[in-house]
Amino acid sequence: MEGFLTGSTHVPPSHIVDPADPQQLISNPKFESWRRSDRLIIKGWIIGTSSENVLGLVVGLNSSQEIWSTLVDAFAQESQER
Image (cartoon, rainbow, N blue to C red; front, side, top):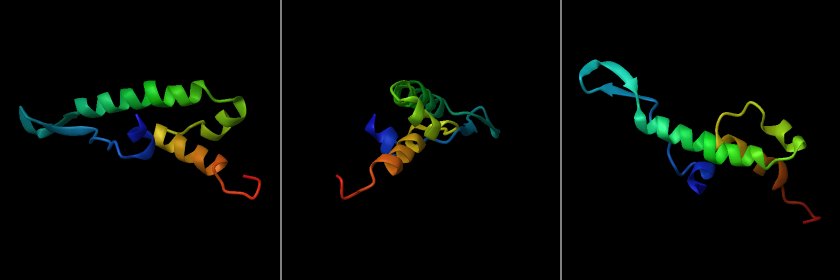
């Protein structure tokens, strides 16, 4: 799951060449599986456990990696207090 947040789990192409008709593109089942995992498991977990203030930062972001990067930028800044 960490790979979804860090980007090390690569996003497969959304479409592939149809083996039955090389002139056509079809939806890639590996992409569909990746997107389902990203949206339901990772993104859903982050959003489901976030406060309303945090949700304002991540509304409209598409992937768990985008959400995670936004949260890191917002809350992991080094400061003298830390």
